[in-house]
Structures are given as structure tokens and as C-alpha cells.
Image 1: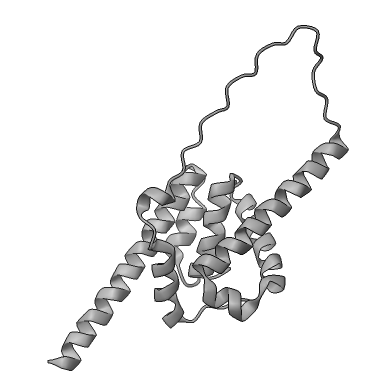
Image 2 (image 1 turned 30 degrees about the vertical axis):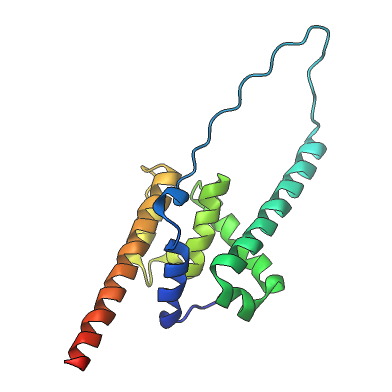
Length: 172
């Protein structure tokens, strides 16, 4: 199991949050309806083809998450390695799905939270507030992800202020 030390938390959260908040929100617009083309039949995708496309899509997403982790969590990437990260990513994808979190952006955010708060953050052992939010089916998945990220930001701010106050006391 992958564990993140408390001292790494500040750096990991800082790395994740270093991008401005505008970058944390992704707007998705529906694609326009294709025009009707006379004389052309409908495209039929068999179940086997759908499963094959799904596997390719999952592999592409997994690869993009490997690159993302390397960029935003370099300490984890270098200490664990790509080969051991892949099962962790798959486990997080499956865990996210149990909460109805299936859009690519929200699953990516869930994976980030798994690294920031721990793979079992949804258990409530260390972060009961995050667990309560993730399990709240009255909220849309994207809203739950944003609320938990807000929680992480508040933790980061508290830890940063706590360090500042302690540092000020030792230098006075």
C-alpha cells in the first residue's frame, strides 16, 4: 500500500494547488448533432467492439494519469515507479466508480485525492469530513470533488499557518 508521510502532504498539496483555481474547473460542451446524410445507414457498434474501445480508452486515461502523477507528485512517482502506480490508479478508478464518479475529470481528481489524503480516504479513518462528502449521494460527483478539494486547501492553509506560528514563536 502506498503511504504518504505527513511532511510530504504539504509539498504534495502545494504542488497540486500551485495551478490557479481556474485550471481546476473544466467546462465540457455537448458536441453538435451531426447532419443527416441521405442514403447513409447508421453506424452499428457490436458489444465486442464497445468493450475493445473501452479498454483502449481506459489505457489512454491510465497513461495520462501516469504522466500527471509524474508531473504533480514527482516524489511519489520516483519512489514507487510506474509499474506499481498502475494498479493504484486502477484501484482508484474502481473505487471512484462505486461513488458514481465516472467522468474523466472527476476520476482524475479522485486519484489526486487518493495521493493527497491516502488511498483509503473514503473510509473516514483519517479524514472523516472527506469521507462524509464522498459518500453524500445527494451531491453531484463534480460538486463532491470540489468540496473535498476545498477541504484539502483548508488543510494545507491550516498546516501552513501552524508552521508559521510555530516558526514565529521559536525566533522571538
